[in-house]
Length: 330
Image 1 (cartoon, rainbow, N blue to C red):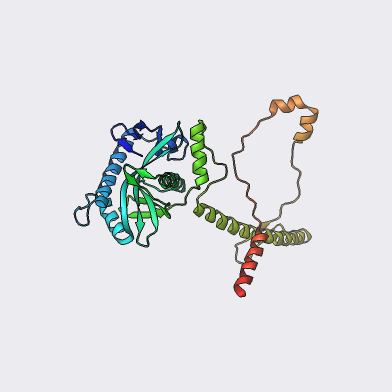
Image 2: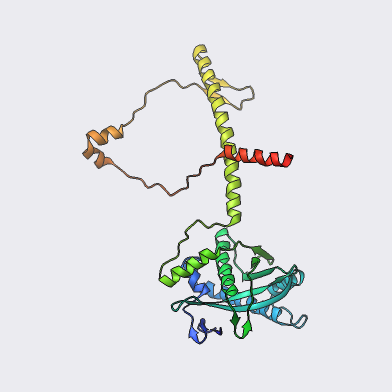
């Protein structure tokens, strides 16, 4: 497979034919990449130039023999220090392509392919975002997973034999605004979803996930917080039951003793007795049935915002915790 890239037009070719899309274009089309539509073009251009300078600096670091090249950017200095401590064998700006069908061919360029010092494989992408949100990390996970999917299926690129068995790790090299480097590992998108994305693109459909895909860290945080909330709500219900009983007794005593106000000795709790009273209301069900025209005239619909209905089986959680503790006691 011969892959070329024309930087001026940002066009890839595979074996002399123009690739139908790039990884970047593909992910943007299917809303699996960050949306920059609301960002000023001058800002985007400035950020692109800044990113290109860093990419080129790191490419030169990786492609030069040790000690022959000095980084020209602060980010390059940070990355040189990182790779000296953590990696062993790197390739920069590795072009990759996939001829999926007669209608679909894809190309892209992986920022870094390599090995950690423990010989585990990885691919990485450099980012200079101001923030790194969960949504942004998920988009980059798609990008890196697609790259790795393509590279594992390549046999030869530009005369070089490829025997890539897949990356053990997918990394974001995040060069932060505070002048530090944060190397973030993201979770791989399953091959089945990558293949479904390609199938959608090939058939002219927009990809929508068949199952919910969320980062593992979000899943774990959700479970932890929901269980904690369920525990608090359970305690709250127990307290409310006791408080209701307390208040009924207090109310009864106030009525019997003809007392309308009470205050705790420390002044923290104050209670006022409120007697029974009638309140006007409208039976909308009966009105709709017997006076439908009047009901229709004064009917005012309201929009309820979308929300999640979360059900937590806290008893099941306690049961699982008990089983875990029993195993630990054995």
